[in-house]
Image (cartoon, rainbow, N blue to C red; front, side, top):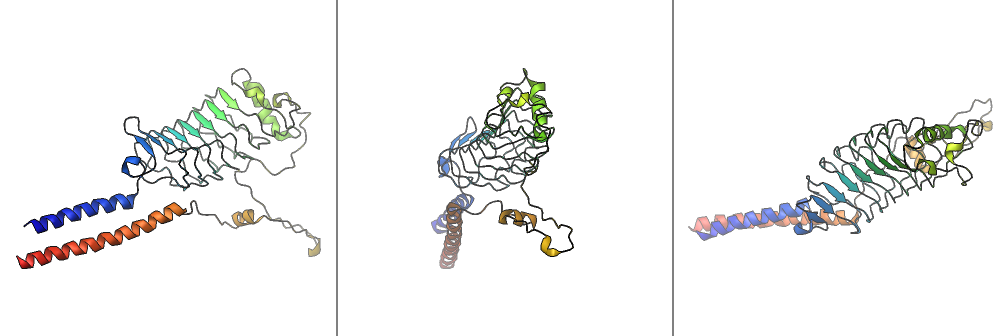
Amino acid sequence: MMGPVLAACLLIILSTAWISQANGATCKKDGGVCTCNDQTKNVDCSSKGLTAIPSNIPTDTDRLYLQGNKLSSLPHTAFHGLNKLTNLNLNYNELQTLPVGVFDHLVSLDKLVLSDNQLKYLPPRVFDSLTKLTYLSLSQNKLQSLPHGVFDKLTKITYLDLQINQLRSVPEGAFESLSSLNNIMLQSNPWDCSCNDILYLSNWIREKKGTVSNIEAAECDGGTKAVLEITEEEAAEDCVYPNTTTAIPTTIITTLASSNDDDIPELPVPQENFQKFLGYQEPDHLPTQPQCLMSISGYLGLMMFFVLISAAILYVIHFLKKA
């Protein structure tokens, strides 16, 4: 009689082990690399050399620390299910882009840190779901422009850090929705005070002077003058550099009217921009070596699971026949 009982126990143990392996683990207590605190609901995955977001982050996580890793990209589903998250720290990584919708499920987020990465642009409306956000840091990236309306839904934000980027101007109305703002960092950007794109920022700084901290620290490229001192006479010319209000740089091929095709100049089109022009997009997330290894391990575990189940079933049948 003990034979079938032992076989059933073996099946349960194998099933539990395989499910745990197939799902992966985030917390150290489950075999993962992150420190999880059940009381505070904090998950600390900082400085682990991660190249991908750990799977199965607990859905009740309040604070998620991912700083100091080697994340260069994020899948658009990276934070799905984490609608209770209030603090997300991604600084000191290697992020170059953010996929559209990556933060859409973080409806409770209060603090987002994206500083010290390699972001060159932001997708349009990337922060639209973060209506409870009060703190946003984008400092020390490579941002060359801001898309129109990127901050429009951030009405509760009190701190915005844009310092140490490559911004030359901001779109008209970029900060109009930031009604709760009391601190903004704009310094160490090459603000172009020679053309009229800078006038919105200059006028906005003068208007908010005395009510928003650090606002006067923004200086024109070269440090010759404060942005708030720029007048319409000084910045009367149209800007000649590429449009800074687009979220993703694009190159448009223009057909010039000419009676002779030889007169039409050939416009260089960078390969990456040409791919975007044709509608090609890189996948949100390419599998990294650890992920591939985990996938192989999962398949091997599945095969072993079925082999052992088959053996256990045959054993039960054999035992019943003998009985």
